[in-house]
Length: 174
View (tube, rainbow, N blue to C red):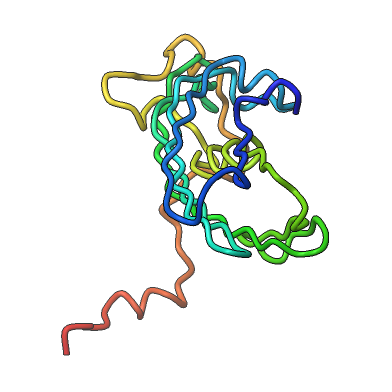
């Protein structure tokens, strides 16, 4: 993570109190992560760090947009992202993950790099299926959509199982 040295928080230098740090996330940030869903972006992550004796509480508030690909028509799109996550850091004996949002680092550590956490929070803020139609004033590429052929058996047919027809007559307002 040498590329993300700017995302180091030297918490040992901070007094026990609440501190606010701001990180700008651009295309260079995403280049260091081996994945292909995000091609770049322009985001800002504000980290509110609350330091206590043997505990750090970090709140990540990340907003902006990422450059990704529409899963339907394969157009490049700018997709808005908004994320609010919390990470608890216990100062203990070793590096280990205690829970999804609780980690332990050695009490002798003097800094914490938050780049990986910001990246993971951005990924979890993305929907599983990114679609042009989710965005205002953006539509899928019609030229590409004409090549999409429905799979056999996936057509919506009007045939329904007659055993379920009786359920259509149930009055749920009683």
